[in-house]
Amino acid sequence: MIGGSELNKIPNHLAEAIQWLSEFGNEEGGGVTRTLYSHPWKEAQEGLKFWMEQLGFHPYYDPIGNLFGRLSSAEKDAPVILVGSHVDTVKSGGKYDGAYGIIAGILALKYLKQKYGTPKRHIEVVSLCEEEGSRFPLTCSGSGMITGAYTIESFLGLKGFDGVTFEAAMMEAGLGPFNQPYTVRGDIRAFVELHIEQGPVLEKLQKSIGIVETIVGQKRFRVTVEGESNHAGTTLIKWRKDAVRGAVSMIDLLYSYEKKYDEHLVTTVGQLFVEPNVPNVIAGRVVFSVDARHPSESILHSFCQQFMDGFNQIAKKMGLTVYVEQCHEVHPVHMDSGLQNIVKEICTRNHIPFYRMNSGAGHDAQLFAPFCPTVLFFVPSRDGISHSPLEYTSDQDLETGFHVLTQVLHHLAYE
Ligand SMILES: [Zn+2]
Image (cartoon, rainbow, N blue to C red):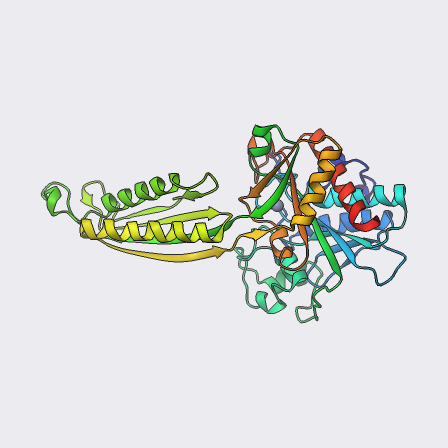
């Protein structure tokens, strides 16, 4: 549990509050590690809970460990405007990823309550339990439960990278039991997520706010090229079935196809295994990964079809065999256009430079978008760096994002 001295440090300002939250799970070298249900994770949630209590937001946990605080409307049955982000981090992550969206949410509720009093619709701030998938091989469990994309059965038997089961970790964090009923929320009218960009676009274009149109789709493949292992000196080139030559031609073809599309198509070959991986032996087998992303499902599909056909032709020509196996797929998710326009109008009215963009990274907003009108907007990340202790956003950019957030919430909950 959170100690007495921590409780005296409840913050008042954005940058100060981000620093305060980063002290739960901070490491030498400036990194923050707060994986789901770990000790620092629980302390951070308890710290946020205490802060919400002090502000009069009646905090509560749902059975999986999402923490909510509420600024209530006078009308009991009014819908809820939900704002927030995730409290968990990757291993040795930064201070801002996820944390910024929660803290800005809490401070926005505080500001709105002081300035405008009781809202017409309830506003809830949520500190989502998990997004990163850094302890268990599953992402967005917090938003997935709220929206019904997951049920508690989704976690049955799930083991973390540390060998601990989801259920045991949950119980250890003082949550559960595992079989508690979980009701999918039917009262959420909109979800608003403010996040750091985690990329270089806004900084390069000198924009303060990035309004996300689409969280891109992803397809990941495992490509196996099979040839024939043989002597590197005695086998003439014309008689070789060299899996490395085949793989190189395929990767080259992949990148040349990529250039034919718009700049939103991005492919990565990040993993490559050569067998037997010996300098004087022609490789008999190469396995490599292909990660392809684009905001349009049909463009992504036709690109993947095209490179797979190309791989088959190369294999045929070189006397090799190729197997392409899809191992991961995320469909593109579009954010609500009405809410995007509200953010755009607020930026225009306040002379804040903004940019409409896609997100190449996944976010909780992606789980909410099929469930309720959802908006995601970004503030710049210095040098585009994230998931690192070097992650940084200037106080001025943090404040700009906060002001836009308060106005979005005012529009949705008071007007
Ligand atoms: Zn994040």
